[in-house]
Image (cartoon, rainbow, N blue to C red):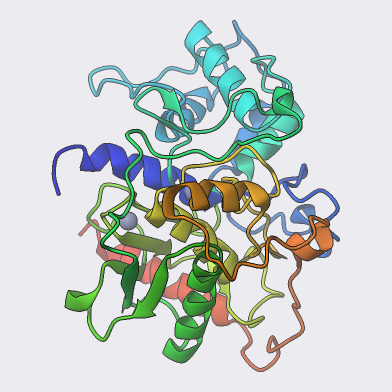
Length: 369
Ligand SMILES: [Zn+2]
Ligand SMILES: [Zn+2]
C-alpha cells in the first residue's frame, strides 16, 4: 500500500470508535450500565464536557483538543505542525461543529450544546466521518424521511472485485487480549455471518495470515499505522476500506465476548463492534441512521449486532442479495439492540476485561522508550 493509504486509514479509523452518550443511538434501550454511574472510569474525551455551552467568539482551555478531535474525524483540516490549534472558537470550528451536528441528527447550531458534547464523548469507531472534505455521512438525515438511503461508501467506492466473493480472514494478533482463542473465533464468525446472510459474499477463517484477505488483531496504543489507540473508551477500533483488509481493535477496552465481563465499567460488546468494522472492510462508510450498524458510536453495556435495513441496502448494492436472505428483523429496538446479559459468565471470569487494560498499559509504557 502507500498511495492514499493514510487517507483511507483515517477514514477507516473514524468509523470504528464508539461512544457512551446520554442521547443514545438506540433510543428505547433499557439502561442498566448508566454512563453517569462510572465517573471514575477513564475516557480520553471526558474533558469535552467542560466545553458545554461554548460558542463562536469564546476562548476556553480545551478547545484546541476538541479541534484535534474534529480534525481526526475529518471535520477540520489538520493543523500545520508549525502552528497547532488554538483555544479560540473561530468560524472554522463553528462550521465543523455544525457539520458534526447534521451528521448525528442534532440541531445544527454550531454551538457546543449539551447534546452535542454528550455525543462527542461517546465511544466510537476510529474511521473518519468526513474523508477528503467529503462527508461520508448523510448531512440531510433529518430531511430524508421515508425511503431514506443513508448508507455511504468510501470516496471512490472501493469494494472487493467480483472474482473475490469468498473472503478468508485470520485472527492474527491476540497476545494483547485475555479473551481465549476459541471465543474470539466464534465471535468473529458470527459477525461475518451477519453480512454473508444478506449478500453473495462468503467468509471462512484462514489457516494462516498468508492465506487471508482480512486480518484481525488487538493492539494497544501506537501500532504502526499512524492511528494510535487511546486506552479505554474513546476510539474502540478501526478498519480499512477494500481491499486492504486490516481490522484493528483497541486492546485496552473492557471487551465483552459471549457475555463474559459484561458488568465491568466501560464494557464494550466485541461482536457489536466487529459487525460494524466488517462493514468498513467491505466498503461501507458511516450512516446517520442511529439504529444502523454503520452508525459511528455505540454505548457501553449494549449489544447491537443485527443489520438494519439501511445497512442491508448499502451492502446489497455492492455485492448483490443472498437468495436465502430472510430480511431484517423487525425494527423494534429490543430486537435490533438489547442489553447485554451482564450476568452470564461474569462471575466465572472476574475482571477479564481489565486484564486487557493492564496489558495495554504495560505496552504503552514500553512504547516511547
Ligand atoms: Zn466505523
Ligand atoms: Zn490500526
